[in-house]
Length: 142
Image (tube, rainbow, N blue to C red; front, side, top):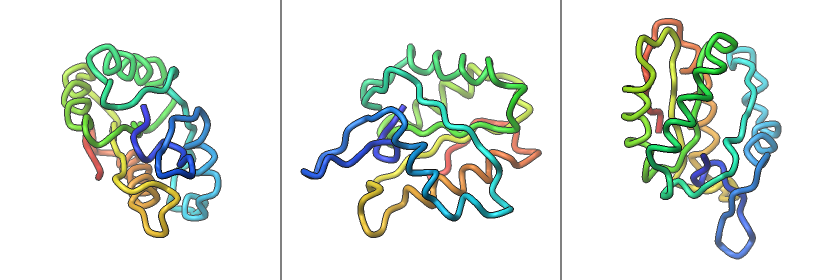
């Protein structure tokens, strides 16, 4: 759903939601090419929204996407804004009962274009956590 981690800097100090931007950034991350990082697919939940506009309708859509693709993946990472991450995780934990794979929510405070940012680490570690075989719950890595 976006948040700073999934948003493209505009050059004037703002960020905007752009479909495909997160996948492009991830394809440039050398740390995701290491053997201990699982393979992954990126899916934008369209239309992209500001995470402060997220509510029950969005949580239902996220849960529905996970349910549709549940058997195809060992785990799921949901990238969202930090201001609504806890609400989303709580809602998903009630909607996704009897999990047999992890659902990890993550985000960042510092945009990709800053010399130091938390986006890269949060995303890479979340991908690893999403493959932990006995982590059967919705959790947050932030």
